[in-house]
Length: 554
Image (tube, rainbow, N blue to C red; front, top):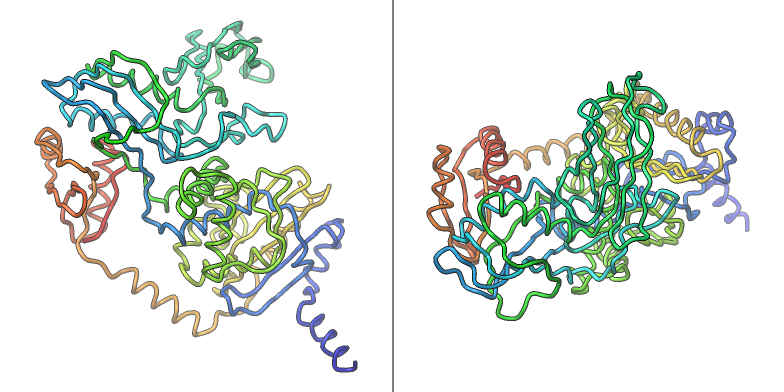
């Protein structure tokens, strides 16, 4: 009995809160029962510095994106790229495609208007000048229904409420541009999926208050939604862009794609159809997204809900097979993290993987274990995916001009009565900590954020130095990162060897290119010895040829 009592006292001492944190909590006025804190030296073997309600399940909000993002890295790797595949069942003769052009979406959440230039170039490279059939869209890779908005709150048309689709386009957002000076209102992208009703009154008043933005009302009683612009707007105001979730992404893609084809003189005689790629269809080419590393960086830094939803679904399809479903996605995240030893104990409800949910649950210790595993495995490369204090993302303004600037890499999560933050903090002496602070309280919005800020500042001001082993590990990983061979810019991959029209376009820019075959044909620009050189070439290639181009090592 005495041994048990001593063990209990020891555990209390080991996980007691430092007096400074106790003082900050008391000062905040938030009850301790509404706060979970888990702070430890970064890495799986680091010692615990502070612990409070670390095993209590909380509403995570967007910090749950850490699990979705990290599972995608473990399963797919940083260099993974989403595909959008183009097929036909017809044949091309004398510049005419006799048949349908079929597009299968695999859930690329980044596909947008800017990608159409490269896609249309690929169509031209196949010698197609006319399409006698339809433009067919296959969105069967995701089984997600037809709902536009999650309807999570009273702002159903806001972009953060956008629902996923295998044939995503422009993040499901319709953009309406208003130029008050010119009395002009127009759609940013051609889309017949909605109608603008302009009742704006232009006035010569200062661009302030009720004269600075129009009133927006959306009517969905008709088959085609109507966006009604009303009120008075000052002609002194600059261009205004209103972004709303209104239409089906595959429909928006069709209208924009068809228009771009016709701009390039490629006539489409048919219309849009929805069905699966038929058996025996011939693949023409594949459009690739940017690297997963860039996509998850935006997911974390900007807390992009749609990207996180797509990651969850993609993992479901990769682990359990298509079509992807929410249930498969949840199971996949759990399975991937568990199989790598990255998942701790406790209640875990992933729900949609993005945190826009009141059903999702996790505890601070479980989240810290995932963060530690990622830190051990990928170090600074992983940390830089998160928002950097005072530099970018959701904590750019929050820590600007403070001692924390450039010393914290965090993921935030905010809902009504929820204010969470988790990630890594480096003190002035270079010591790194894994930090999780979850506040689920009616006082969370302002007091919770202030408490988190003060705890993080206290950590940064600490003088504890990193151990020699930790320094040595970082040096070794840096050396490993520097090792490289030749660099190339990869422009694209093709099942059929690209013709001279395609390669001549590259050479006209003064760029050396070659085509190599390994399962598919790859168009490479290079070689280059220095990464700095290939990065400059990449910028040029993205601007002139293909926004989805990327650097590869051979």
